[in-house]
Amino acid sequence: NDEAARLFRRAAEQGYALGQCSLAECHEKGKGVMQDSREAARLFGLAAEQGLAVAQFSLEQCHDEGRGVPRDVGEAARLYRLAADQGDVDAQANLGVLCAQSGNIAGAAHYCRIVAEQGDVASQLNLGLLLLRSAALGVSLPAAPGEATRF
Image (cartoon, rainbow, N blue to C red; front, side):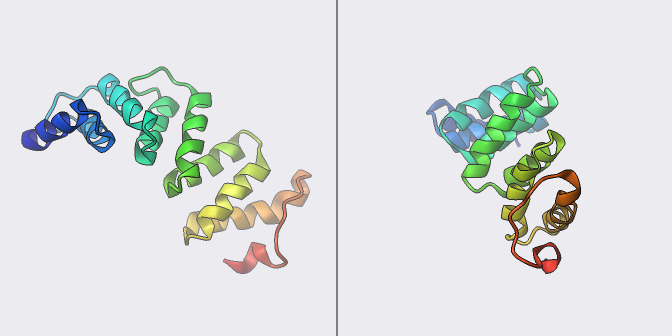
């Protein structure tokens, strides 16, 4: 709503990362402000520079999809890593997918394992498949005996 966007703007103008990120989400969805993907990406960038994991994840999505910024998969992966290293589960899961898509099976298994251990069913399945198929791919993945069927 308009009042929420106004309050987020005040916080954002004072450099508050969560205010910047919240206002970016308003711009992304057109809630209380005009929809503006460029402004959303700019604000996510300001919050991401301050280390806010959710902003890093959101900015990554902008780069990955080319929303408000030119599409840049390399920058997207860098931002995923920043957010993932801070424990953002969505970033960890998406980084696992990105690693798999780029052929980095060991990296994919690493991030799938982190998310799987937090109870994410899709990551548990993906990790199991990676572990079972790693030999066929010529990749040696460290795993405890029976890990492929543990989850």
